[in-house]
Image: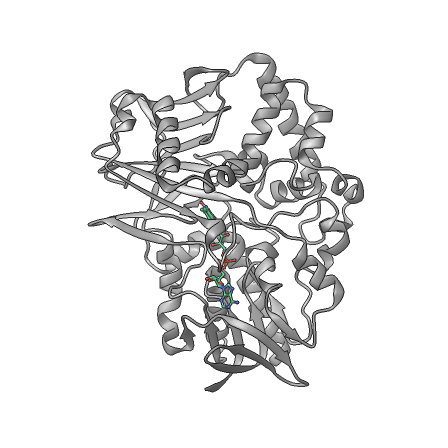
Amino acid sequence: MNREADVVIVGAGLAGLMAAQEIVRAGREVIVLEARDRVGGRVFSQEIAPDVVVDLGGQWLGPTQDRAYALVKALGLELFPTYQEGEHVVFHQGRLKRYQGAIPNIGLRALLDIGRAQKRLDTMAAQVSLHAPWDSPHAREWDSITLEQWAAKTMSTHAGKRGVSLFSEAVFAAEPNEFSLLHTLFYIHSGTSFDSLISTQGGAQQDRFAQGAQSLAQGLSEPLGDRLCLNAPVRKIEQTNDRAHVHTDSGAFTGKCAIVAIPPTLAGRIDYSPPMPPDRDQLTQSLPHGSVIKCMSLYAEPFWRERGLSGMATSDTGPVRLIYDNSPANGTPGILLSFLEGEAARTCGRMSQEERRQAVIDCSVRYLGERARHVEAFFELNWSAEPWTRGCYGAHFPTGVWTQFGHALRAPVGRIHWAGTETATRWMGYMEGALESGIRAAQEVLEKIS
Ligand SMILES: Cc1cc2nc3c(=O)[nH]c(=O)nc-3n(C[C@H](O)[C@H](O)[C@H](O)COP(=O)(O)OP(=O)(O)OC[C@H]3O[C@@H](n4cnc5c(N)ncnc54)[C@H](O)[C@@H]3O)c2cc1C
């Protein structure tokens, strides 16, 4: 088989599908090649009981994610607010405390320490360029240390530093010694502010999809018809003078341009002819993904609500350090979302499924009491074990990577253009970033082939 189009897109995640929509709208021919047997990539919704859909991948939207909200509206999808009524709990130094509002009660000194760190990070983040972080005033200095080293130098309390590691795990699914301070600052700026990244109401965890976030990808893919090929992993891209030939196991697809809309580490596993320039190749060698196992425990009802609890818990002790009420909009059944992130995901990933389930449920019991033991069903997805994702929520930049190779992140190589949330300027790592990147890459190729 050999098919031709103006543009061949690799990957039917939100970035690739958004790019396809833009190209079709411009009256050009497109083919989308997707390795999996489904669209959506890192958004993946499952119906676990009749009319009960859970998101095992991306699930929340929040303010300033304007492209995503516009798409929700255009596709006629329904959102509802994340459940936040009642008190949250914090498990701190072996004690469980209830609290209201955004700030857990972990002692004045630690709170002041975290507050000061947050303010400093926000101030520094505002100085980092979203388009060229490597050109920012203190780029080299900030790219030479990790977030952990910065916290060790500037923070004074152990509890404060544990707070920074919770931030790191919750936002990057990685430990604070795994990525640079510059990357932390870029990410904060990209996602508006520290507060906006971690908050529910008014932040990135504000709204949920009634039918699951994958409905966004399904809505984008429907008009593509047979221009979308599933089960078509791309193995090789060959560039000639005027064409890009994209090879799958079932044949080649030829375009005037190709858009590779997959995470950099996966883009680095495709064979290119001619080979990628050294900077681009070394960039893709340098961008690991975080580790997350997203777990869902199902209960007959959200029993914590009767006790005036929101179901949200944070903790200084693992393996689960963050849980949310993830019940459907009507509140039945009760669903608790537990995150295993960073090191905890790696440690628990080595356990048997039963041991891991038990470890997760033990944490829920610790935070919400004995009734949490009566789980009716348990679902989990280890994103590091997914061959077409290989870890989540996305790529993080270890020390030195932004300043040495950042310039190669979006720069086209001949007829190959790059998309995917990792290439976004706003909301990198999020669905919004994926959509931004798809629109940008589509504009680039449309200009080139016009
Ligand atoms: C557990 C989890 C929770 C998250 N929570 C949120 C959240 O609440 N809010 C939010 O905004 N974001 C969240 N995210 C992140 C969000 O899901 C991603 O940023 C976004 O979906 C990325 O889209 P993408 O198109 O850039 O990449 P992907 O979704 O990774 O799409 C890439 C596609 O390319 C395919 N592919 C890979 N290699 C090849 C190949 N060689 N040939 C052909 N196809 C290939 C893949 O199968 C995939 O379908 C979460 C992610 C996870 C995993």
